[in-house]
Length: 151
Length: 420
Image (tube, rainbow over all chains, first blue to last red; front, top):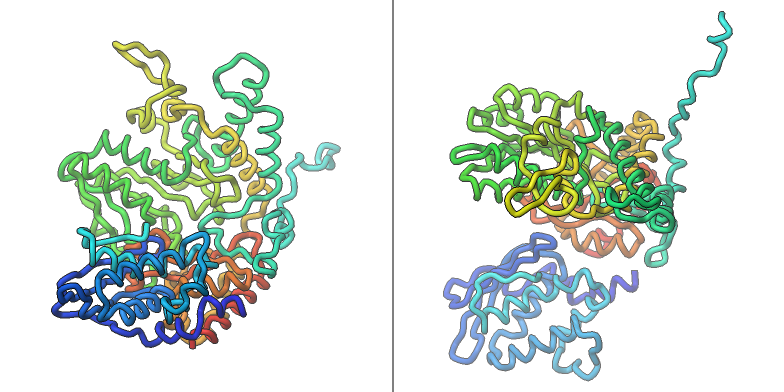
């Protein structure tokens, strides 16, 4: 049970139970669909920009605890952030989840609450659950596709 | 009483009726996962193999391997005899009229693609229809969509009911004189439903349609008799029925296979080749281009031998007991919902547990050493019908027992505690 609690930390369980920024964003100017073909889960990410800033961001869809918590934590964190900072954060989180070597303690301040997702590293079959929202976000800010997939 | 009658009956080996004794034959089951003894409940995705299958494949690799139907040398002879011997075993096992009706493929997916491409090219045109059901695996939908796009025909899905059974009247209503092919799963992988094939095939034939059966999930549970069913095509995958991956078969009625154009070109499938004209080899070789999966076929033959030694009435009783026990235990958990409640079901239990996502259930029980499948089971139309994106699925094979069910329930109670 202890190892499992490293994956399903209290922060994750809390954000799964009560996801923040959940639901549609009526005046969004970027809408991206994220699909995880492994499980058929879908999420939609809504982003409203104001110049160089993520003014508002919301998401909806169905997903596992990891995917919902990751989406929730992400929206909470990047709301109000600059595009540049958000994209830098994407790289940091992506490294935390997928890089062969990642120094969590050196990045702990910057990651803050997002460090709760680091337990996913030990569960390779679940990494895509955690990265789905982040890929959708990157695509919303830089991409041209309106649907992205974890594959 | 004459002396003759006192003689012992002809040497027919006794069938195994003690199904519980078979677990010892499967080496992969005897290991620990995350420090707990493995409980393998994902056989509907891929079953484990008995030692006899592994031994047959290793023996071939170590002693007999050479290309088949090619050389005059001793190893080529042995290899060909073993490969064709496997074909003969499968042919007898499913009661085909003749072993030339058994085409080796990579598995059910390739078998259905072969039928769809070859038969479809021959008999589908604009306005024609291919009737499938809403409970099919993607492998029995997408190949038909592909050939329909090429020929101008349409794929029509027959409706299913809330219990996950085929809507019998709906099926009849979908049949008409445009229906050229009916493609049905014998057992639904996502729901466990066993379809009343005999009846459906007869009705399809009355309207003049040909019938192709996806038998992937039936192979490990049912004795199949293709002549009694009177199906035109029947597909099986080795790895769902205690054999290896990468091998399966397509059964087809001789006259149909004879009339159908080749699916792939290459070695083995030809008689003569020139740039003016190429003539094709006889069945079954016409549909087996290139060097086949020889070791896989031999492994599948060994799996057939293994199944042939088992009393299928005892097997069915064993698996039904596990299904009923697991279903009743599951339904005692708060928020449990079974997806697929047909009267006639194979030992496949697809379920939801409250609001806990199937992936989370799968991860929690995995830490308890219990392997289940989670996701859409390659049957997205089924998931859409029941309004879910994923389910958890425990599937029971001959080597499972009631302790395995108890271990699953223990894992599910852990998940309930964690996500309450």
